[in-house]
Length: 153
Image (cartoon, rainbow, N blue to C red; front, side, top):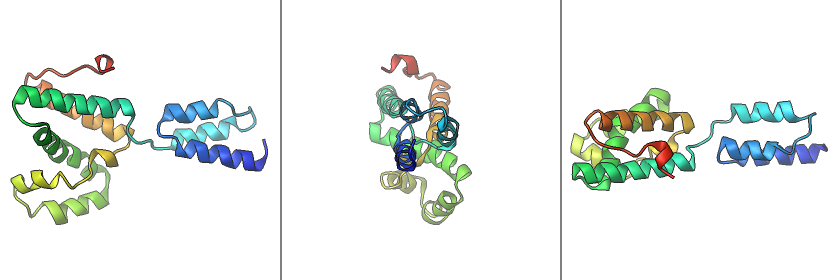
């Protein structure tokens, strides 16, 4: 493989949205470069998957119907109570932002602020998994029914 082709391949891998998409790109790599490309894929932190995204919005809808809240209210709540906690634990800059911008606000104002604060879109796949697990645990623990991931499709 020529140097330009390898650089082009690495760029394509780095721009992939999911690990699966990156691995599809890797499928055509010759044996000589396969180990290094696989190492690159293994070290990439991918954003949340489309399946996670779809399930999240499905759960928000299901929760809203069962609680009598609007979908906006549910999204605000899970972003503030669950999502921000995950990002604060993992990201010092986000923690500093929350201390400066959210801490002085009342609970009601913090909920409203969630309309303007990116939370799940900042998460990588592992963080989004934790987010989804905690949402599920929180609402199932209160007796609410949520679609199982296998049923979501």
